[in-house]
Image 1 (cartoon, one colour):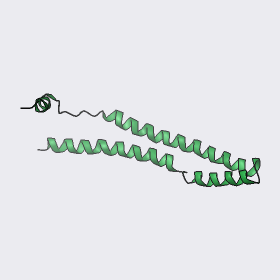
Image 2 (spheres, rainbow, N blue to C red):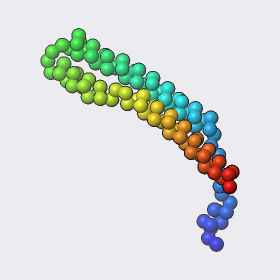
Image 3 (cartoon, rainbow, N blue to C red):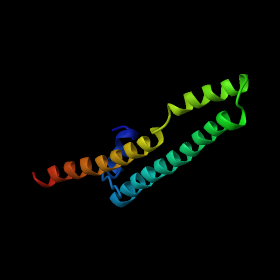
Image 4 (cartoon, rainbow, N blue to C red):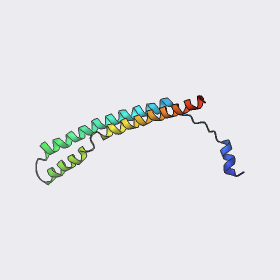
Length: 106
């Protein structure tokens, strides 16, 4: 028997997942996504204000408008990412619980 095989015999094969921690992280990431989305909305409004009232013409104005347009494509992505992370956390717990139940149903 090799050293690697001996080590496998001593490794604890039990997987312990703290459901509350995983679900809490998902909720926290969802909340963070919402907060980031609100901050990003403020950022976009600032860019709009700069283009509308601060720099109203010229190449810097055009660059600001172009930047705002590209940045605007990210709108909704922060909240979406947070919600997706939350969904993955919930799905992990559900999948593990389902797999555990199959072990007990044998």
